[in-house]
Amino acid sequence: MITIDLIQEITRNDGTTYLDISNMMMNGRAELAAIRKMIKQVRIIQLNIPRSTAVVAYEQYLNQHFTMPAENFTTWEEWLPEVGTQSEAEYRTIIRENHVG
Image 1: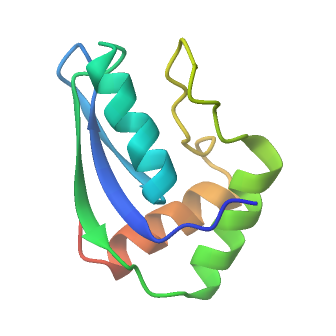
Image 2 (image 1 turned 90 degrees about the vertical axis):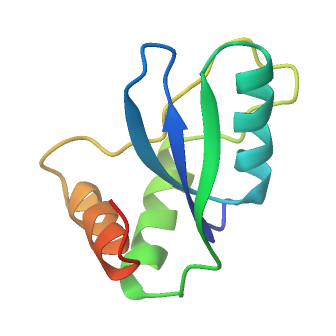
Image 3 (image 1 turned 45 degrees about the vertical axis):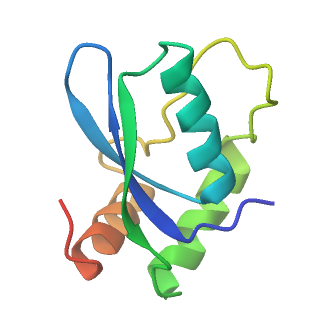
């Protein structure tokens, strides 16, 4: 089960960025992805985001749609909600509530 507690900025190899709502284990996977050249870099923007109804709902979405990659992963999977969904609204609420993005 994934519990989220941070926001990190992921820089793709093409230089574009996105905000990822995640946890320390996934941050470690992102660091490995950067070392393995799957992404350009990762940096933590906000630690210990407060538990809110949007966070709890977004955790449910992540747990239904994604699985923590094993340490030997070979591709980077972006954990972003589908545009126009309730999960995207919760994602945007979390970003707004934490004054990032």
